[in-house]
Amino acid sequence: MLRYTLRRLSFLPIILIAVSIAVFVLLRVLPTSDIADVIGGNNATEEQKTAIRAQYHLNDPIFPTTFSSSPPFIGVQRHSQYSRWMVDALRGDFGKTYLSQKSVRSEFFRRFPASFEIVALSLFFSVVFGISFGIISAMYRNSLIDYVVRIFAVFGTSVPEFFLLSLLIIIPSYLWNYSQPVGGYVAIYEDPWTNLRLFLPASLVIGIGGSAGLMRLVRTTMLEVLRSDYVRTAKAKGLRQHTVILTHALRNASTPILTAVGGAFIAVFGGSIIAERILSIDGNGLFLFTSTLSRDLPVIQFLAIYTATVVVLVNLVVDLSYAWADPRVKYS
Image (cartoon, rainbow, N blue to C red; front, side):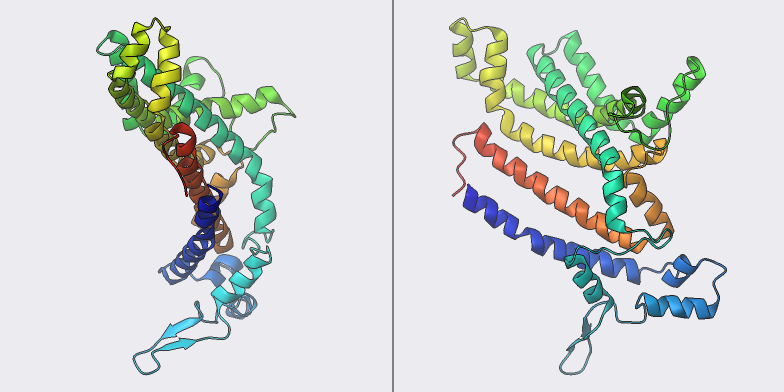
């Protein structure tokens, strides 16, 4: 398994380089406003814009490789915007934000606890609701409980998260005169009550959306496993129902469930951006949203690479967990 893990991790730099090239080039070739206008503002003079272009090397070619219709067809530029950015990135310097002129890396780590908390809580609720209600729905197939769980799953799949998060602010304020905390970030060790008031409702909403697909998959998989001969044998031996379900059935149904949990994490990871935007939580999701609107390219590039890294590592962890769930799976 160690060799397999190292082999998978060896592809990570290749993936990150490909993502960085795609994001870097696309952000600069799309027909949007000039970067000098973004940095200098609407009142910047042409002299100031010229100085900005020189400072950020905007007059250099975007990519070190150029193509032509005449031999040798491919040329290499000594200096380019991408090569300068890559050299700095390898040193751990991902640039400064255009508007505040603060380090992108320091801003990311400052906002990371808020994003981590909302993703962790949302994933927790997604997994707990999805697996538990999916098992209950399979155990009581075609009963009232089953119908309620299936309706809940359809509701969670069909209703957009931004709509539920907006209702989270409007309904309590209108019916109970309760004001949902909005904006900023308070660490849980500083003020636990304010922290939970800010994160718990939003995490529940995102967790419901993430658990809907997982719930339906768990139900389908458990129904198939519960019809197996070894489950009937375990019941005939007099084992308790929860032992049969949790020890025998769930373990054998866990392979597709683990895949769905990985997908639920990615869905929650994306849903946190919406939650941070609506509730104005000072996390990296809001950081990415505002930077995209203002075309703050260093921030977008860094967060795109960060997201790609997280997705690759999550998929690797899911693949490795198959060996734990099913001893027949061997990585050699």
